Structures are given as C-alpha cells and as structure tokens.
Image (cartoon, rainbow, N blue to C red; front, side):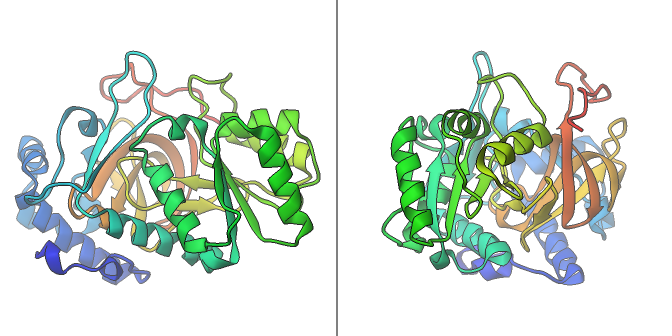
Length: 330
C-alpha cells in the first residue's frame, strides 16, 4: 500500500461490502507495517491469513496510544495530537502523517450529516481544549471555521458575554449557527445566560470529567434544552485516537461518517466481536491508515448497525480484564 498516492476519498466508503474490502486491505497492510500492531497480533496468536471478515480483525486496545508510538510505515508526523488528562494520568498521543488529510476527512464527515460547511457560522466554546496546543478537536473546528468563512467565526475561552452578544446578533440576522462546546462550559454558559436559542444548533463534545459533577448525557441535554428553548441538542463523538467522527442530531443517537464503522465486543471476552448488541465499542477508522485503523475503546454502548450506536457508559479502569462496569449512563 503506497500511502503517498492515497486520497481522502479512498477512505470515504458508504457501501458496506466495499468498506469491508478496504478494511481488510488496510488490516493486511498494518499487520505487517505497524510494529506494535504486528506484535499484538502475534501475542494473541491470530493467523493473519485467516482474517477474512471484519469481525475477525484483532482490535488494538486504545490504552496502547498512551504507552507506545503507533505508526504504520515510516514517516515524520506533521502533527502529534495529544489527549487531555487529569492529574496523574498519561495522555494519549496520535502521530498524524498528514494534517491536511485529517482535515479533509473530518470535513467530509461533517458535510455528510449537515450539508455544506459554507452554510454555517461556527462558534466554539472549548476552554479546556484551547489550553492545549495539539488538541485534534481544536484543529478540526479551526479548519471548519476557515472553510465556512462567514466572517463571524470564533473561539471563546471565558468570555460568555461576548459569546452571548455574538449569538444574539447572528440569530437576529437569520444566520445558521452552530455552537460547538465542551459539556461543562456549555452548562456554565447556559446557567448564566438563559435565552431563546431555538434557532441555534448546539453541539456538545462531552468532556465533563474532572471539571463538574458527572451527569448523564440525557441530563445535560435536558438542561440545555430547558435553558435555551431547544428541540434537541446535537453531539459529536470523536477522540484523539480516531481521525473520523460520528454525529448525533438528537437523543444521543450517533451515526458514523463513511470512513468509520462501529462494532461491539463482549465485556468479558474482548475477542467476541459482533455487528450489533450491547457491550464495549470497537471502531474501524479507515482514516487511521498511518496509525492503526482497528481500535478497541473503553466506551460502553448499544450498536444497532455498523453505523448507528449510542454511548451508555465507560469501562471500569480498576478491572484488568474490563469485566467490571461503571454505572451505565442511562
């Protein structure tokens, strides 16, 4: 596989059989070209030649992004994305071969669900992310703002009054506006500035951990809907370790973009992977061709199809084999 000739459209595959074919092609490439992934496959005694369906592909535990450099092939990264962390935690790092390809893939995913980015003004309330120089979410949203080019885009750190004034101005001017924000900041803003934002698209990205009392996604959405007279709250599902995203336009029901598929694994048997059901979430992200496209996350969820899922909780980090669960979020 020649990564120099790969285009972002090579990953954006809506038809399931074609997606599976591409996933298997990438698997057989990464099983050789990715030193860590190759060692993991050998350690769990998987015969590479016997992997002929996506449910047979070994999924790399996401925690390896905290302890190893995960790359396929040889390259110097254009950027290394790094996750947030609380005191005492180790951050995940994702070595990205092409920042341009990341941006273009993210934009294709957004426009698959929302239409042309040029129809929207993007405002962002991402204080915890802006405080870091290499957050993938900030990089993505900044690119969206550049492509939108409405002239009113902007990031807001703690200036709630300025954000409120800008939203009021845009809404009164009948602009289509998306306010994308981290959960704790949206809660603080909504608490201090209740308003009729019924024409606004509010998109939360998660991120309550360590900043406020933990609440469920449904509780967060109910509060925001009450404070801002919203019919629904949207959500974005993404992470440092994935270069593709999923979006929920209501009720936390996520749909992946065409470069991403979701599977579910049994919490007691990480090698028991299915197309649907309840368990821990596995993702195939074709855009991760330069790192690892097959990630076993620590999120719990309900998978309805390979592109439809809900997040219902997190694995308990105290369980070495992931057998114990935290209280589910709904």
